[in-house]
Length: 443
Image 1: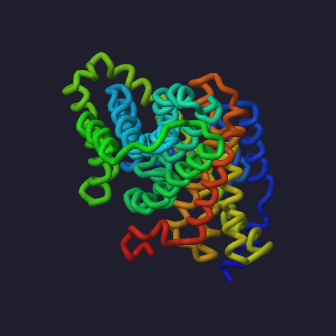
Image 2 (image 1 turned 45 degrees about the horizontal axis):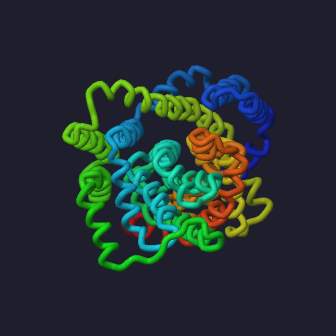
Image 3 (image 1 turned 90 degrees about the horizontal axis):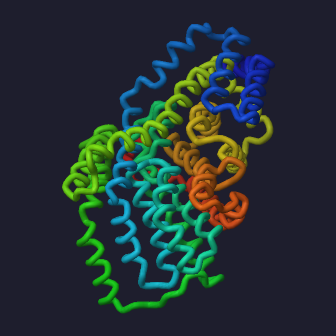
């Protein structure tokens, strides 16, 4: 049987796989950049195993990033940078605050909402944490929140950057597994909103327990007046996410076209308002290039590594090893989530996707999990890693903004992690959450 042959090959995997993996772990521990560590692991694995020609590396590096879908990544990042530079992101905060100022804890809730709004444009967690953190952390502290908790709130809210479409992470996993990014965006909408709601609920519960933020109820007429004023003064800012969502979900625009259109509209609005000048563009391009310079080399180096592991039979070996322990699908799903959470704690999302998706996907197929559901579960689980040490990218971003201890911020982020994990479990065990908005062919 072919499957038995695959199992025998998988069991025979030796140091031609484990050696390069140990090298990769060692380099990461020594602080070597992730892309360089992955590249060293890929070259070593190719050379030692001789399962594929070493000349494959050069071809894979270029072919791996020569995809039209990846063009959307710099465009969404650029849109986020222009949004901040033009001050349109502050309009989101004004509307979010007007929506939530009727109850105690309103500004904390507004902070979470503006994180979600920014996520619907930039597709990047770190960018959202930096942009929203600059606008809100000082005001959160003035409102009565302890600084570590205010930082944790922004860091948690910014996790929606890769969870609410458009998302760079979904573009990458779509590329790796050969799934349309537009389809994944549709599937991710409800799960992303659920994560946002879980963060909102967590903040409300914590606020009521500790009475961080004061305030009281206001009349309906006053609330409507505040909201109307905020919307009238900043309605044009919502043209940007509106175009992105309309274009992608209507099928009129690809993610790349939606990103390009969003950049153009944001720039035009900035020029009309006078908040953007030609002299601002060099700084904007440099800022966007720095983020892209982190993402694309990781993708380029990860793909030949993934190809080599596939040729060695690592995914099949993993499936065989895991299913030999238990065939209970509920336990296997928990195991996958545990692996993703652990990986998210120590490594960035992009390399985790490129390395782990081809390994875990066969296991998901083995237990009958929908491939779209698997992608959404994987990205959501990895998203929790943005607020879990030791890596916790969002923790580092808000710590850098405020000078607050990362460990203090991480301790205050525990309730958010707990509620986000509950959503991950819902996504994993209830397929309808991630497939409801999709055509029947994907269900």
